[in-house]
Image 1 (spheres, rainbow, N blue to C red):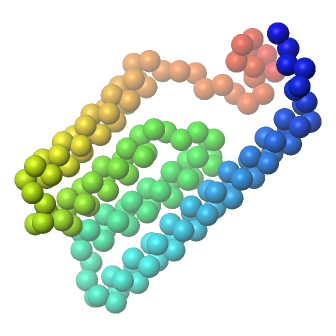
Image 2: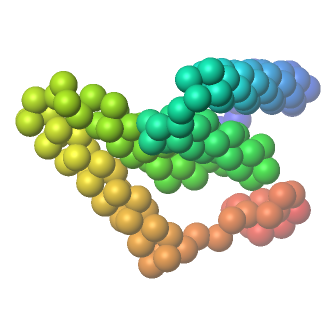
Length: 146
């Protein structure tokens, strides 16, 4: 079954356009992350104090930047990276609001971190136990030809 409405030139132009939009989006994310990190550093300097919450927030910013870098290099985003960011964000939330949280919320947040850590371990185990071949550029997946 062929699609008679398929135009290779239009599909190619559409793919290029989406690539540019993707690159613009990644640039915006990177610049915004750098600005937010700079603001956090300025706040630490103004307060003349560095807290664990500040360091965890900077770590989250670094993870976002490394996630963008990995995506630019490989064109794919490892699922583990957002999970790491979520674990650090939950830990930061727990540290900042520990005194004001009821016990059940503390347990819920700690459980969420454990669930995320378990998910990371499961994903890592799956990659080791069931590795998959990454297709090379220009090689067809069906026939192995270029």
